[in-house]
Amino acid sequence: MCPYGSRKRAVFLILFIVLGVTKDFCNKLDIYMRSICFPITSRIHYARQKRLLEKLRSHPKINLQLIVGGSVLLDKYGERFFPAIQKDGFRVDEVLFNVVDGGSNIAMAKTAGLTALEFSNSLHKLNSHVVLIRGDRFEQLAIAMVAAYLNKTIAHIEGGDVSGTIDESVRHAITKLAHLHFVTNEDSRRRVIQMGENPRSVFNVGSPEVEFASLVDPKNDGRIVNKVGTGPQIDVQKPFLMVLQHPVTTVSNNRRNTETLLQAIDALNMPVAWFWPNSDAGTNEIAKAIRIYREQGKIKNNKIRFVTDLLPEDFIGLLRKASILIGNSSSGIKEASYFGTPVVNIGTRQQGRLRGPNVMDVGFQRLAIIQSIKKQLEHGRYPPSHIYYKFDTSEIIVKILSKAKLQSQKKFFDLKN
Image (tube, rainbow, N blue to C red; front, side):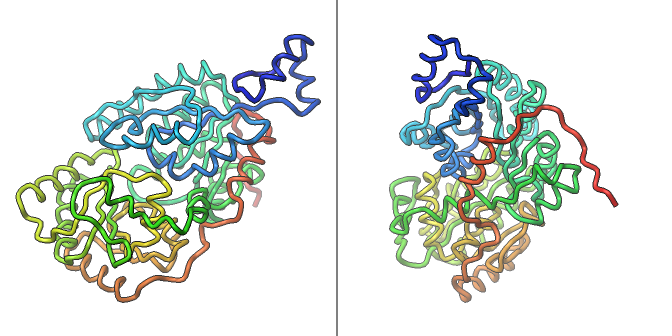
């Protein structure tokens, strides 16, 4: 019997039961449904792949399975995202409570272990054909490991990039577990092939998040930011800054670095939308630095608004209007490049990534940060860059996923000299 699991196959199910249709017959008629599991363990997995998920959901021969867990289910990191996923019409097949809180390296390691345990049960239950993994988060590595042991075909988005922190090691480890690779640029494609992957399985499709950003209604200017978070209102029609500073998991000075950044931003006396960090190790240190700085009355600039998160379209609308994006988020490397939004990238978290001329790199020195921000303000917007953009990225990925040969065995592809 052909696999069953979604309402759009109900008619076929009746035929299968009544006529005893076999899987081979389904394949000959080209009506065989392929179940593709997409794990969402962080708000960025939904925010940045929304277009792709919509395409997967609407494909007549794909059964999209969503497993939601991680920080998406925690109020302090993503209280608006889980309801938004359901409101957007997506069916959530499994919910995993897999987070060991604490914001430390040991908490990350234990969360990865718990993710492996919980996801094993869910994937065994769903019996997916393909597990589609995005990026380089530590939970995704645990999921890739489980999928490999359960003999599932693994597809990976955004392999081959280089960056700072543990993320680079995680990203490359997932690449070695994956069978299909959807990279965002030609440099990354070369690196994945260099790691022993068959060139025929490596596709330069561009960035799904940049494609999504390109399709957000230009009328969305992110003013919804004034209805979430705390602090003074921001007039999005006038110059303002955005700050996204995430923890760097391989250092122990996240708190001190955040204090330096706070001092630099405070000295500029401009309206600021400051976003809360993600849940990686070091997040508590960043949060503590912000709270103490604020509660002790050290902030002289009363124009800083602190925000937990925004829904995908609203975040893109705000990014498009911002005078500068400051911090260490990959949004500054990717989505900001498409809009020509100036970026001051601080520290090593995005070290080595392909970047456009809109990015200015600086270390954690107060004066250097201030000077870089002033230079970017003086420069203004940059010409849009298409280094991460390709037309119809999501459509290409879905087409490949719907037809690619399912496989479980990996082989090292040796390049001939």
